[in-house]
View 1 (cartoon, rainbow, N blue to C red):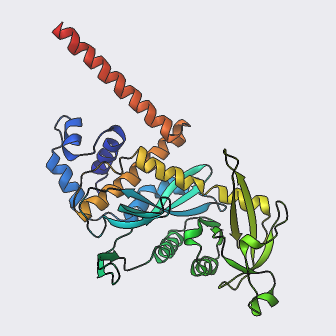
View 2: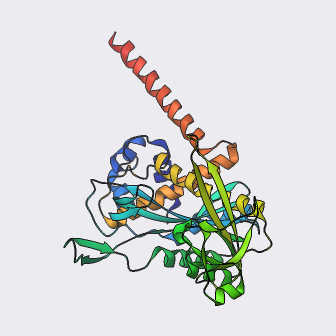
View 3: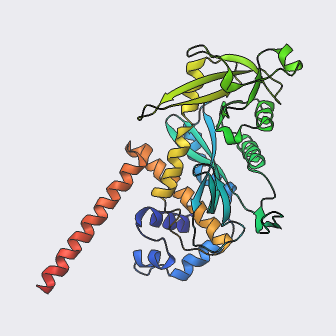
Length: 353
């Protein structure tokens, strides 16, 4: 990969506040780079998670700690009016509770020392088409599941010798196969559970198949419950957090942890770090122009997503150096851009007065 082209494109994503186009980039540099050069750059080859690792490796090495965490979550960038293909297609959005058309991105975020660095990613593609018998509509499906992709990404991080102790995930990735995989690699997990997940409180109950829903358990105040999740053969710790919303309503969160040396505070404090991936996804959409590219092919769309991840990484590095959060940095760029536009407008008005 030519770092010069990558740096130019990611700088453009950080500098533009409208649509991210090849002609827009060319105009920004006064025609020093043609729009055809930008298009060729985006369509020349496929940029993958391996290319991302080459970009972030040195920074990860400078911040990594044995107590670091690896956070997994996916996000959907809705693009309702872009032509459908195996990448730009329908995905279930668990936030809105219905299917949306767009790009589904699975990220692995490494968090240590207050910094959050993307270390792996996968785009959810659905190349297989089939006819739904009930609706008689043509639908798409993936060749691999998100859980399988997550396990592959964990293995890649291990092969890259990334230092971490815990894998953090929400309830959508809390499959027993994932738990077994993580523990077989010598790592621990802290994950959210759905309320209907079943647990046996003793080994005898597990063997006798006497399970209880986690939302029906009695938890000691800020304490842990030990037990065995159905389908997972090792003892775990469970905690319950209760949150009060501004309107007075309450919500509960059940967490499971494989590290039996932890207590309530350790589990909840560790899982709180998962919020970093939500901030990262917000930065991708708000600061990195994730949705603002009019690319049309699978390759150029995929490469644009890769560039936005690199741009978000670059912004995180600036945040570390300046001690300002990424959103404050982008706000500063926007103010300076508005000031420059205002000054130019005053010159034009003065010239025509």
